[in-house]
Image: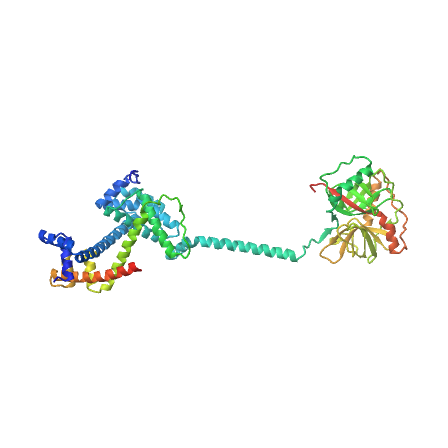
Length: 201
Length: 393
């Protein structure tokens, strides 16, 4: 990041990234607001709706955000360009899956600055992650009660063991914990079975 | 023997850093030594890692939705974002739109290209159909241009231009008449002698817009002529031969009838609808012409382009009219200007002291003769009138 682009509210890209890395929610909000019109315009121009634009944009921002939080972001261009590249790719994929015909976007396909931003690779990783998440959700659904609620409560909803003990009527926290570990073992079997299956496909 | 669940408890404690230092060192040593245990640990890490990532993802999604909702509502407590919000609200103002309208908008934004193509195809199809129908109709139905002048357009005259010019020069004896390079012969008609001194009669529309006129007889003798008088109303024109070598037609075999001819009279004409002289016969079918024109007769002679200006004679060899036009939407309806108008015209011209006096023929040599004999005498006094029009005509 040698360019030091000034965004609309006077913060450079580096400052913004640093703030996001620190977990500053206002920085994320600012990032979101700054680039929303661009992506929204792009999707609406290419036969998308406002909801589509919102979906695609949030997906794109999440990819960016997770890379920043992981410290694995290697940005060779402006944030704006990176986000555009990611969202463009995402929307193209959705259009292709929706349409019977070949899809052409209303922009310069050959020479756009959004090529070679590394967005492609990041997206492949993100897609892999998405696949893992969907497999996990499937595995959780197959797990059956009360294991599903217990694990979801602990991991996804961030409830404490004490709350879960009370909620599920275990006699003490240790019982609940043991139950959780058992559930986890079953989940592991389901998850890896599904995941391997997916990969084999 | 530890169950898998026990291992998981151990792993979790290890990950959270809750193990005491000796137990931690022990586990690390075992992980390094036992690949099966290491694999089990890796699975555990992936499993819990995925669950935690999913949890983070969910939270993030929630957060972004919140931001988006804030943004679209335009309510924000963050000063730094005011500008961005302003830009947002001006570029995409939130509209209250109904369900139906939103569906329509979605449809439009999704299919507008297709709709556009379909619309243009429809428009083109409509116009192609209309044009096609129109062309089909015009090809089927004759254009009812009911009244048509019977002058002839001459195409091959151009090729003869040089020969004609050479002839003119020979006749003139000088090269006073320049070769008219732009004057292509355009039209032709018929004319006939009015007096033996070189006056001729033809239709006005034949010589209209003429640049120069050429009279050609049956013997291919050509004379240069000029227009003396034209009567647009009655479609008559008087020409005069201006060649010096011309020495008169001789005695004209027919006379001009100054009164009305009778209905049902057998009439005939000679004319040049093509290169050779053509005889046409019929009867006088009405004493008025096109749309009640009292200056003309309606006759039942089949006439063709080129017949215009031809003489119309009755059975006794009296000239009763000048062929002018035909009506296309009627069967065999041709029109001829009455000779009485011609006689009146000549009378009025006599009073203007012309260079050559008008002496209308007094005796009729055709009366009582059989038709072929009549024609033999007549044909020497019927001429082709060739008209050289200006190029702009």
